[in-house]
Amino acid sequence: MNRPAVRDFALLLLRAVLGVVFVARGYQRWFGAGMRQTAEDLAAAGVPQPTLSAYLAGTAELLAGTFLIIGLLTTIAASLLVLVVLAGGYFVHLEHGFFVEDGGVEYPLVLAVALFVIVVFGSGRASLDGVLTRDG
Figure 1 (cartoon, rainbow, N blue to C red):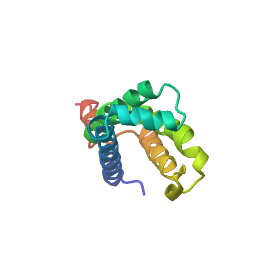
Figure 2 (tube, rainbow, N blue to C red; figure 1 turned 45 degrees about the vertical axis):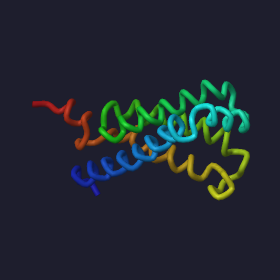
Figure 3 (cartoon, rainbow, N blue to C red; figure 1 turned 180 degrees about the vertical axis):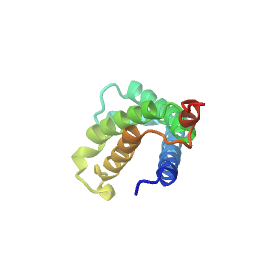
Figure 4 (cartoon, helix red, strand yellow; figure 1 turned 60 degrees about the vertical axis):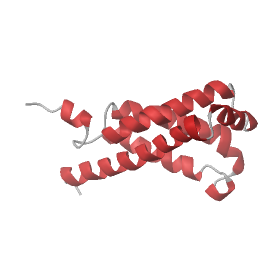
C-alpha cells in the first residue's frame, strides 16, 4: 500500500502511542516513584551509575516522548529512545528471558522496533517536522 495519507496517519498513530508511553514512564520516574527509588531499582538490577542512569532515562523519556507526540525532531527523539530502551533491555530485562510476564525482553524489543520504524520512515506530514520542512 503506497498511499501517503495512510502512511502519514499510521506514523502519527505510532508516534502518539509511543510518545504517551514514554511520557508516562518518564513522569513516573520523576514524580511517581521518584528518582531515588528509580536509582535504587536500577542499582538492584546492576545498572552502572544508577543515579545518573535514572536521571538520564527519566529525562529522555519525558522530553523525547513529548517530541514524538508533537512530531518535533522526531528521528533524533526516536533514536535517543531506542538507545534508552536497548540499554534497559540489556541491563534489566535480558537475564529474565524473553517473555514480558517474566520481566524479559519482549516489551523492550517491541518498543525498540517500533521506534526504529520512526527513525527509518520519519515523522510523516502530520507533524511539526512535516510542517517545518514543507516547500512553498
